[in-house]
Length: 306
Image (cartoon, rainbow, N blue to C red):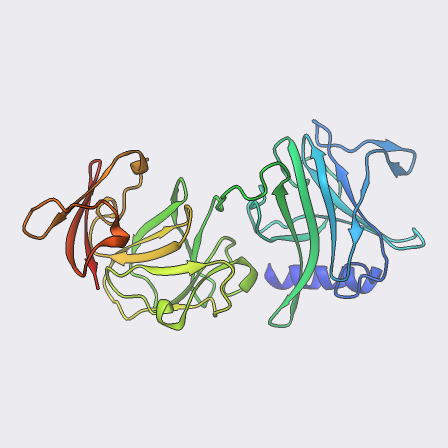
């Protein structure tokens, strides 16, 4: 499937010289979709098409109102050749907000469109290479709240051979129990080590996972996207993408003891010393080195401060 996608994308580049690194003034449009999944036509032309603005390496459109989703429509400058793009078939149909989503060549038929909730969006289309393969990508951002925190609906632990495990998502906290492979990446699309789909460790040290130690991860990190570990028995893995910083943690403790999953932020934090005394502060960042018990609502965990 991946090879087929790569061939299809590169074929579009060669046929149209459209939307690779050399955009060469070939126009690109957004085509809104109607409620029944069709598009409005006037003869051979689209009634509602929106011309995207071309810059050096991408096309963009701001404050685009969509009610039922969209397609991208590329056309050669003479109008003789054209291609339609939608979100490719090996990913979730609903795009990930604020992060790159892969595109493939499609036809206009109900169900093929890029699915988006009604709203106003800022949209970009661009191309990137990864290990010799070309990818058309797009980002979509809520125009009215562009800085609103968001996280993907799915997160995958992907092994070098392409095998992947889907982590359970509870409001931005992703978790599972498994024997984790010695090497893996965390991707919001089920593909291994394609950097523009991966959350990465912020340092070489953070890439080596250890029991009961949180490692900070970030989508925009410049590090390689590979995590390693030497653990051979089943562990709980938990990835927290709410707010910042994002973290990954592995532990033998039950998931709900590693981190509260269910609306725990509404409960106050109480911090106990190892002797059972209540600490004067409830600010974890101000704790002196030592071992503590953290209680928030019904959730309890141990915290070691170095």
